[in-house]
Amino acid sequence: MKKYILHIIIGCICTAITIHYLTVLNADYAAQKAAWNQMAAETFREALLKEVEWRSKIPHYQSFAGASGVRPLKPQIPDSVIIVTSKYGQRVYWLEKERFKRQLLEGGSLNFGISYLMGEYPISVDTLHHRWDSLLNLPLIATTSIRYVMTDLGERNDTAYAHREHFVFPKDSALVWYLGYRCEAEFVGSVRYPEMWTTWHPVTWGWLILPWMVGMLFLLSYKKVWTFIKRKFTKKQIVHVADAQIADAKIYQLGDGAVYDVFSRTIQKGSAVSKLAPQSGTLFLLFLRTPEHRVTVDEIDQRLWNGQGSKERLHSTVRRLRNELKSAPIELSIEYLGETYQLKIAHSIEENQG
Image (tube, rainbow, N blue to C red; front, side, top):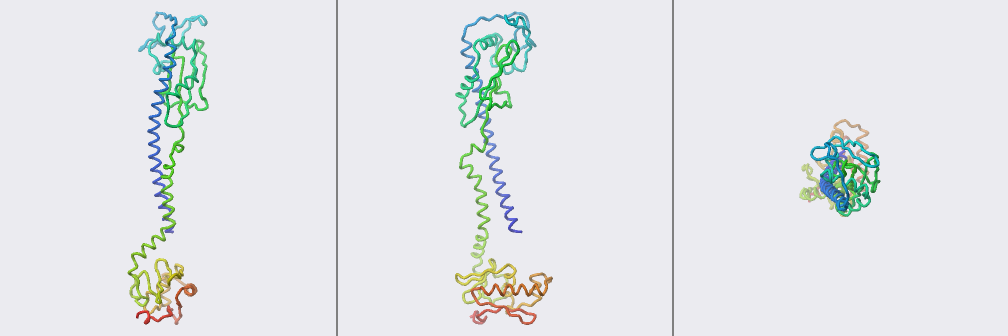
């Protein structure tokens, strides 16, 4: 159970570090996109102005009616204007006043001329897109597109796109502009940025993976490190097996160069090592810490099962320890003396005490 709790703790720590790092990366990317969006809006307007600039230099004849409400003069915009043409005659056009807030050029007469010039010299959406891209020059690979909607005097809409497959209507009005006397030409710019994770440098990926790698290495090696640290600080606590009264010892000297490590439950002599099972290790330690290494049946039952064990269970546990001690690098045995078990070592205690 403790092992799984440690796994959960390490997993939670790594997850918290990853979430924090992703939050920082997302905030940084959002700030960059805000700056790029501002640049996109400014260059889109500049590209449109360049398209208007050369058309405005073409000489043409204009005629305006002088009646009130015939042409929109800022800041007062009428509900409608009257335009007389040879094709449609005199016709009333209702104005969408919201469009005038995003009109590229100010001044009724100037926009009237632009309306005429856009009809005679139509704007190419591909040319406008190319001009915008050349001005934009974003620091990453972004896809741009433009939607151009022209409403003629017959009030029919003609829509054209540059890179229609990439078009996404912008969330704000910074990339929407209108041209013409009736704001009949609508230009909508669109910028699509790549997903945040596709812009990451390999170093960024490395920082994301690092906490998980460290966590995995810790889980794989923490037992060895912990055992090494405990051994380092408990080396001075090595006691002779005869000194059973020292109950807090962590390493016991069994004699003939053999020792028993309580933490790792190992009996070691030189390079030879044998390891006891958890319950066998508990019983073996009970023998070591008991005077003359004699343990009664009741003491074993109380120590291992809080007095709730059975005789069959006790005999099975002792038998398992006997079998494990056969592979120990020192001769050890357990003898049954009525209601008492005693741990025997090849060399007598008196010899070890010497």
